[in-house]
Length: 353
Ligand code: DNO
Image 1: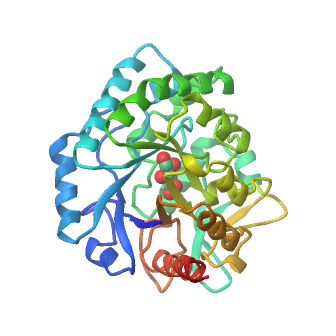
Image 2: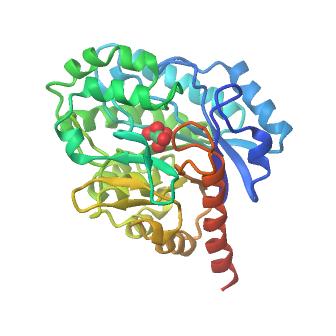
C-alpha cells in the first residue's frame, strides 16, 4: 500500500507540500490541474510544473484526481468524439511524466452532494453533512446557492463556478437520459480510452456516486456491487479499475465494503478511506477515521486490503475541521493527518502479525 494525500495545487490549497511531506509514510500527492475546464487537453508544461514542485519535496505525482469528463461524453452527444480525443491526449501527457492512476467519475451534473459543509459534531469540530429530506424536497438551484455560501469562498472540487453557470442547461439535457443510456455512454468512453491508458501505463479508476443513489432525479450508475461488476466487465483490463471509496459507497448501509474489496481485488488501483455515521432517517455525517466514531467498518476494511496484499494507492479521505483550522471543506491538514496515522497503525499491526 502506498499512502497519498490530496493536494489542490500552489495558491489553491491551505495545505502546503512541505506539510504533506512531514506526514509519516507519504509517497505521493493526489493532484489535478484545477484551473482547466473538463474537456481541455492538459498541457505537458503545466503537468511538468506540478512534477517539479512535488520532486522538490521528494513526493511522487503518481495519482491524478480527477481528469473530469466533459458532459457531452456522459450525454453521448454528437461532439463527444472530440472530447474523447482530448482525453486521450491528456492521458498521453500524464503517462509521459509517469502518472500511474487517473481517478474520474461519471456523475451527471453534480459530482458529490452535501447539505452543509460545516455541521458541528459533539466535540465542537465540524464536518460535511447530508440531510436526506432536505435533498428530496430541495430545489437544486437553492442547494447550489447554499453550498456556495457555506464553502466560504473556496471553490469545491466538482462545484466549480464554470460548471454551476451551466447547470440549468445540464439539467435539461439529462431530462430523458436513462441509466441504461448513461451506462452505454460510459461503455463507449471506456472502450475508446482503456487501450490508450494501457499503452501509457495508466490505470483508470472510476469513483462511485456520492451518495450512491439518484439525487434530483438524475441517473446514477456507480452505486453498488452490481454496477461495479458491470463496469469492470466493459473492458477486462487492469486499466479499467475502481476508486474504492468507503465513504461514498458506505452512505448506503447495504454496500458491504470489505466484500467489495475482496470481490474486485485486482481492479482497485486507488482506495479512499473515509468514515461516516449513519442516522436512522437516512442522513449521514462524516466523522474521524476511527471506527467507533462512525458506522463504517474501518478495521475490516483495512484487514480486507491487507488480505488481498493491496499494492495500490490509498488516501485518507475527507476529514473534519479541527483545532480551528480553516481549510477547504473536508480537506484540512490535521484530521486527515490523524486519519492516516490511525490507518497506518492498523496496517503496521497487521503486517507484524
Ligand atoms: C470530493 C471528492 C470528489 C471526487 C470525484 C472523483 O471531495 O470525493 O470530488 O474527487 O468524485 O472524480
